[in-house]
Length: 453
Image (tube, rainbow, N blue to C red; front, side, top):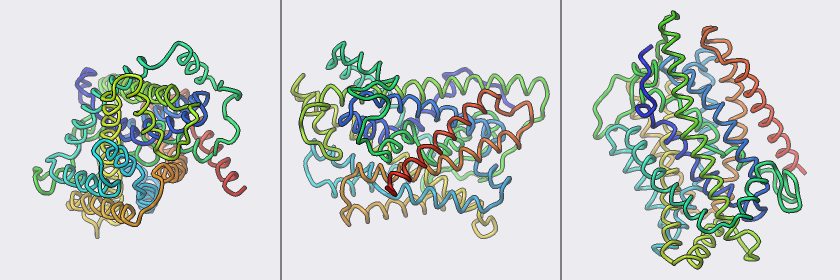
């Protein structure tokens, strides 16, 4: 086990994972629900992102110790058939381009033009960025860092400037489930919409599992000895390998592991959990003070447009335009990160399914094959003319909640049984993961009942 560096040296993977969630739960679903039902539901966002913190750390645990993705560990434990599940449970929920359509709709309000055409241009641009960046992870990390470091403080400043003391009081009581005329859940709130927002309080779905790729490529722990995905056009060729290697159990290695475990918990807690929740809360507060109770009919992504209009009226018009530009850029970067994460997941699992037919040496080619397949399919959906992007985001999130339930159980069991005793999750973390799994079961059952009803 290599020595653990200081916190500032390992910042990165959580920026990417946070960026995966910005365009779904943070920017769209929680503000959308707040625009209709107020801040009394915000407890779900705090609970959801807290649950994802513990879930993600179990994913990081495996990659830190073994220098490989969780998919390799799961296939080793249950057989290569799990690769088929991960390909299908990644492709089906994420084929719907609700995020990029949301970005296109926002950007057309700034630059004009047609939403569909704008979405097609953005999809082509995403393909170009991911194809031409020499090391895919470094390109993505740099983009997400800049957007979060610049965008989040501006959003916080807008929320503070436009809100009153009473609004902050409503935010505080909303975190403990008290809304206007209801506790916990308001009457009429669709369970599927709430489950979608809950699942997207962070990245959501199989995207959380991509954290094991980013941990490995950043060089956390035994990931130092792993390989990276490089551009087939501009990148330096690397010897690809799936299986990692772990370390011998002794006093020195355990001391180093414990230091690594401490520092990556801080990294994920500060960037993913704290920054992620502050972003959700501020965007929900902005939605609350500008749109909620205004009497304006709001459909789909229209609440973001209405927010920008009100922000411009209460300050100066350029501030409303800046809000739309930040939102559009974050949605664009989220779709980029989604395509990257899903392409990584599906390409690696394709190799896992049949290593003889799909050789590991061709992993970068498989990555770009899945990337451009998804982009082309998204373009087809856009051209066909599907309706509201919010509806597509909610559909994808409902499917992803089921995927989270499956791998939450699988990853916890693997860490409890396949790791050396000294490296397994503590009783506290096992208990928290049990609560996470229980909540996912509960909300999936409730949503199924509401759909059948």
